[in-house]
Image 1 (cartoon, rainbow, N blue to C red):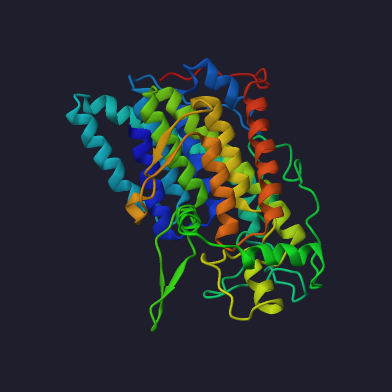
Image 2: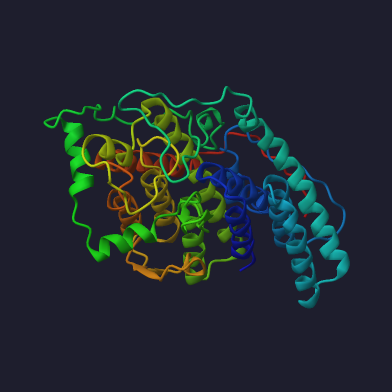
Length: 416
């Protein structure tokens, strides 16, 4: 399916660019929204759902020529990806390949060219909407300086990367009322006393018995674009996708298995991407509020100076677990569209060296993704469990919003 192909191309460039997890979700959202817009005028279901996106006004693009709206959707996605991604120029080649593929399928050069023009026009409108989400304001904020207080987050080895997206919570969500709409419970307070609740959290991470299966689970859901490997002479970056990229891949495995049509595939990709974006906004809002110390830092200081988790610690505060929030929210969306008990084989990261893994439901996969962070030594249990609660609320809120009566006046002058 062409939509899945575009998502794969976007993901490959994200891996090359080392795109961080929240930003990756933002990219997928606008790229898929562009594709949805190309189909909106002839799809009442999309009109309703897109009418409830925060601050979004349907695009009016008039065209007198004959076009193929599905073709326009692919071009709109590729044009938007080209503008958003740092190495987006690589999509020029992808557009040319798609153009030639359509010619071989028997479409006339005229129809392809007009469809491409519509895609380009839609992309311009989507970018005008994207630029108002306040992401560009995050670069003007003061540089975030880690607090050197006991219990607060501090950069971890081997890269000691600076904190990722400390101001992501100021972005306009797609469906949430605000970043703090589903703020979690206050985290268990830091304490270095051996009889404290927090110390017990540390001990659980440190003393857990890591079976071969638990190690496999941790590695399968690692999804850390910042991972480095020390070969004794220099640090080498490892190619890994973000949590959002993993779930976008899962979605398209399910779409392909269900043999869903182009319009439904576009809708699922778009709603999932926007839900992931909102999940990261909500999670990141809490991360830099509670600013809690990572297990690696705490265990080394208070229990064992030689401790090393089996996964590298990502460069941002611990509470909540981002993978727990995002995966749970994604499972809610995919369960709604595909079915709660959909059995599938996850092959998303085979190209990155991971073996396929079978799941009996999206919920099972999300649960495994969440607990993998404990096995990996990068999260405490309460960050995982509270993350699952928040993710469930975010996912259910999206479903509530997209099923509400359309709150915007629809523009019906689009001609595709």
